[in-house]
Amino acid sequence: MENIRNFCIVAHIDHGKSTLADRLIEACGAVTQREMKDQILDSMDIERERGITIKSNTVTLQYKALDGQEYQLNLIDTPGHVDFSHEVRRSLMACEGAILIVDASQGVEAQTVANLYLALENDLDILTVVNKIDLPAADVERVQEEIDSELGLDPFEIVPCSAKKGIGIVDVLEGVVKKLSGPTTNEGAPMRALIFDAQYDSYRGVVLLVRVFDGELKPKQSIELMHSDKVYDIEEVGLLKLKREKMDRLGPGSVGYVIAGIKTIRDIEIGDTITDAEHPAPEPLPGYQPAKPVVFSSIYPMSSNEYEDLTRAMEKLALNDASLTYEKDSSVALGFGFRCGFLGLLHLDVVQERLQREYDMSLILSAPSVLYHVFLHDGEKVDVDNPAYFPDPSSIARVAEPFIKAQIIIPEEYVGPVMELCRENRADETDFHYLSPGRVEIRSQMPLAEVLFDFYDRLKGLTRGYGSFDYDLIDYRHTDIVKVDILVNHEPVDALSQLIHRDKARNRALRYCEKLSETIPRQQFKIPIQGAIGGTIIARKTIGAFRKDVTAKCYGGDVSRKRKLLEKQKKGKAKMKIVGSVEIPQEAFVAVLRSDKQE
Image (cartoon, rainbow, N blue to C red; front, top):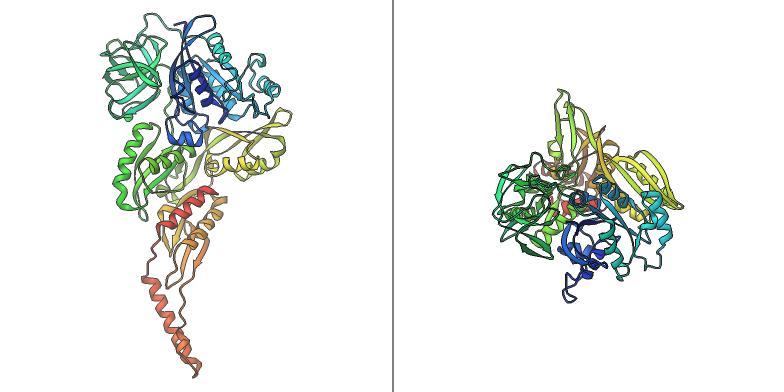
């Protein structure tokens, strides 16, 4: 066991986690030059195209150190984006050490600090690596100062490297085996192993990725999942070496896979503890937290006869994505669909893109919302994530919405515009902390609903890409939330209703009305498009009627003839307005909801 090292790589987005993982895999000879490709642990096309890691990936490497000892390195590459921080948390629980990467040109950023705190919470040894030292903008001395002042780590113990050029990779491996400690176990304790991830294999069912803490796992053993109380028989165990490698047993300290005939990922909970069914452990491993969706949106097929295809696609996607929650939903305007819960806006974006690419679906998504706590006058509390279920305003005593603690790190010259951005998004209790000359950390508390749409994009735009952003959910606070309905020809369109703060309701309603007035075709009568809070109209646009000059055939004669024809036309228009209905084309919904995401 002293020659096993379980460690993960954590860093801010785009500081080079996957590239360093590639070089470590190459240096340990786990893959031939012919099979090598960039981001080798990232299996999804979206991950490769966007250059991001969405799912943590694991690989076991054999490394011969400079002192001649053979080491087994279990490496877990983790995502950097704040939406997937629960993946990072579970990966850290399976490790004794972490490589913390800092970009030599960018320095310490928001997610770097957040991931360090996560690692320290789990009592991990930290190996600090400064990556991208080959860049012209690299400033290792400045980064050392930041590591000392912001992270409180020893700046003289950092390992400089360039993962892209392969510089300093042996030093990183030596740092892993010398500075990170090996696993420990309790001799004779009942068997306990942590499920830190899972994959779905269409032939074998669910493949559990586990870290064994006490005891051992072997085929034909009967195991129990402690949180769900389900019992299974192990069919196969082994190590993950880019491909699954079958083994006779997984001993204490090992990281590997377990196949036990589990049919669907819904049957297990990631973070659960495995124990022996015949000699169970008295209590599960600590630190288990279920993934909680924070962003909710409805997904509808573009054509209502594709609902069955969408159902099948959602079921298949959920087999691989345990953090996606969904339930059936319906809309008068858009037909049947699903109400889905996501970990954040990037997670929503990834799910939407996977449905479109892998299952060839054309989709309409409703505006994202968060979970509100609504307190009624009779003392009842209702949780609402869908505007359709928002109670009657007269029965509501108060509404609470989720707040986050935002951490923004920016160059000093952008403080003014970023403060204005925070103020627009209802930021509260804002304070500053100067990290180093020219770099400022802004800490602020703001509603989660405000950062859903465009906050991150606008922050990147205002700071020319140098701003970094991280957040943690803190609590629920009372606020003035209202339901805004969009009426087309005096009929509410349920798919466009949304919950929003009263101060922003008029602007959002006006934007919806303008977009609909541009995309709904004209009729023989005027069509009013209105935004309303209850019975109060707060925004309006009118689509003009087609005009026909009925007086064109009048030549000469008394003016009363023209007036008579115009009066007759006026009556016809009024009658048509009463009986006429407005068909809202699908393009109108797409245009409105797409513009909402972009702004």
